[in-house]
Length: 130
Image (tube, rainbow, N blue to C red; front, side):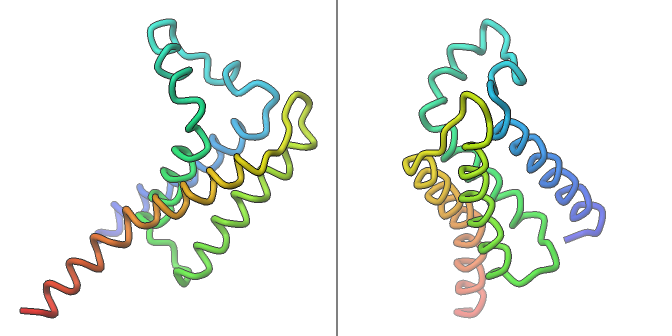
């Protein structure tokens, strides 16, 4: 991967992490996001899956950025973030932690990671088989 691409992906994943943290730890995420009226229906429809989708994207972006850490450390930090942000929600007015949200967070991380890792493994196997 080219250095410029890696830097861009690292900036994107860091920016997304900051945005996600703000949304997860603010009393009313919709007030921060303020979707246009046309998009409000779509956003409302996606809300039950919000934790899953946001964590899947976080995992994918984090792995795509190829941070200079062992893969196990990256997974561990993602899991810590998923559980930690849910616990921190207990300190935010109008927000409450939920085991269902933790479950969605963890499944999202697993899915986003699989979407990044599995194609690479399949490519390696096909190259090794040749």
